[in-house]
Image (cartoon, rainbow, N blue to C red; front, side):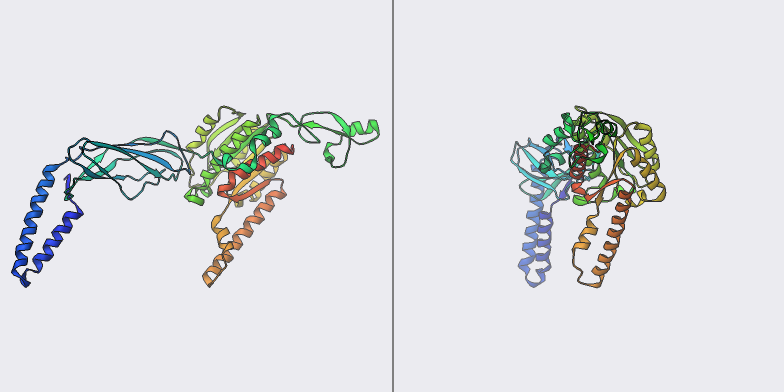
Length: 439
């Protein structure tokens, strides 16, 4: 039934019933109640005849062309009232996986033969492809006794892309200048890099590994080789999409969402230094993979590959991912592993594989610190429950610290920062590695 009594109608019926219930106290109240019901019925009939008919008011919803995770979406609703009566209208959205659709209705008043466009800011909660549902709409005319309800089929395909604003938000990194110094310009660095440069006499502060022993023997004094920073190096990013990456971090986003943002931000910076960038997204199996290649101007395709990668409730096969790394990389490269499965990586089998990988490549493991653990350690316990909570958090933090130390001991560099800082920390470490010629 498209016509429904409004709350105002129910309130008037309830008031008439109360007056009628009090009729035994005074006969005039019975006449009042009867008059109220007659007037209510007449007004309801007029309301029904005044319109508009359900569906006469036109409602359209429009999403922006580009939607990025972590940024609010401004959704436009165009409402046109071609009828001869002004209306109050309410619009209800269906739930979506990627957007936090509001539970409250969007309410608008429109004059007769009027048109209006209203905007609503909606938060994004997940990446990937999605489809909006229908709109549930009701409207009332000035009588306000009946509501016309109908459904608007407004399905629209949308895609929520990762947020690439981490670079712009990290002004302290001074990325343009540092990126050029790290690899875009072929600058001479004392003892750094991997391309052969010139010979000179040893001075204080030179790295021991830079000594050219053959030249030193010929000249009878220590001679070092100045090397130029090498361009076009390989950066391979491994993204764990397994069970540990399904957890929610700050702002309600999943850990994997922060990892994807960090991977794309790192890829953008590496592309500016003319490095070749590849990626492997994996869980129990390889979900997506690209070989290292120059992606300057092609970051959109790289983004497209990662935009729809979703976490899976399964254990990740790190051995399979490491096998793919050995198969893809022939020269010394930077391998960045974005994963929260620190405990798994320190198991004897995987630790041995990581150590072998670190022998041939520069390996960096980037993880996100658990905000709940940090908060539990920061709060001062005031009762026994909080004391137990703090003790558990302390044990978890100590286990994690020990695992990170074990990774460092086998030659693997580590990052352990809150999720919102992951992209900036990965970029900072990459630039430091490039500046020091550690590849």
